Amino acid sequence: MIALIQRVKWAKVEVESQTVGEIAHGLLVLLGVEQGDTQEKSDRLLEKVLNYRIFSDEQGKMNLNVQQAGGSLLVVSQFTLAADTQKGLRPSFSKGGSPQVANELYTYFHQQAEKKIHTQTGQFAADMQVSLQNDGPVTFWLQV
Picture (cartoon, rainbow, N blue to C red):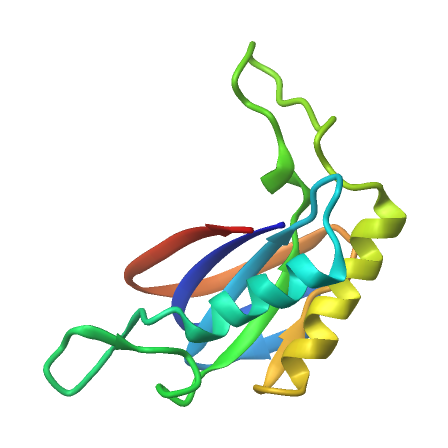
């Protein structure tokens, strides 16, 4: 399971010109599901996302996690994160989880996140437009 996280001042996701999820300061989490991913992996990835210290403390050092910084999560499914880009000029998606499993794990991830922090989401398998103001920019690839 993969999370590309971006520290943001704000982020929103639209489907058919309608906002379906929006946060102020926090993390935009682009979530990819690979074959073999499980709820246990989802739990480990969520804990990593929530505890990853990428927000500035009073001395300007990255020592705070999203909860300590008073932020929120915007979780957006992104199957392209599971692409194999090692060969050729077209990505292969053979390592990606099936749409059914990916939707189940995406739903599970954001339901578990909502229990711990204010969380908004995109819409699984929709054509989404994501807007954000990256803060830093600060972007990290997390994988379990």
